[in-house]
Amino acid sequence: MPHILQPSRNQRFRLTLNSDGRAHPVENTLAIVTVICGLTAFVAAFVPGGHVVASWAGALGFGTGLYSQYVSATTPQRALNIVGVVASFVGVALGIAHGGFLP
Image 1: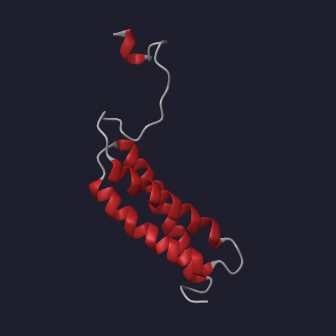
Image 2: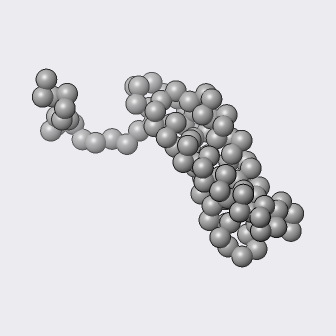
């Protein structure tokens, strides 16, 4: 059983969202879009005058993230979804607090 606790030396580490061995292109794309929208909203929320971008990117990321969480198939996808949803929520909240969806 020692091979279960530690990876074998001939296998190298791979970062993948498909931990179950099957391809999930739609779910992976949704998870990545969620993280990108969330990070965009989070960063734009701290830029003076970036409230419009933060609000729209945050709202888009939040909605996409919730749907992506619903259809996700693997744990890494769910982890990315949560990171993206939280970043989107913070971005949209700060964007609305600083001026909202319109310039």
